[in-house]
Image (cartoon, rainbow, N blue to C red; front, side):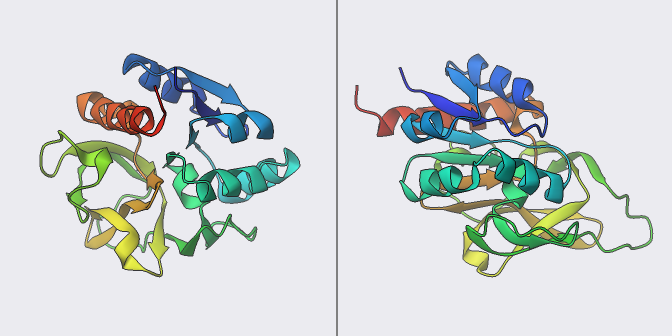
Length: 211
């Protein structure tokens, strides 16, 4: 049975993510143990809240290097919401350095007439990487659920796997690079579309793990 480590660093939505994974047949394990993260077949890094407390909590639990090693190992890795943003080098939300796995910065939405910040609610994705395993068996331009005031701005736009339009701004909604996938929206709150994405991730994990 594949073990999916869900990283616990006191930044919310662990149980809703685990429930979503369980609904598609996975056995997630909530943990802040570097050893369990290293031994797991895949890792999910969720998160709700602010950039600086997230990085401070990861540092205090000695999780920064284990997360980097998990990504470098080639095992499937999924970041969700804040778990996407902290993969980057820095954020306009705070002063702490990010994990720096992806080159780029987290930026705040620019104010414009009629624009609501935070970007909250359902919105449509536009895929920029069509054949990503996470997108399999999904409709084109699917609706997913967002809650965020900041968005990631990668240096290399080739890592973008989906974008979303909020007001007049087209921003990165998901990234993918090798075994690393991360999304700004909440698949666990995105109805059947989100569950399909989680199912796709679990299927990818099973493909990677010998029977």
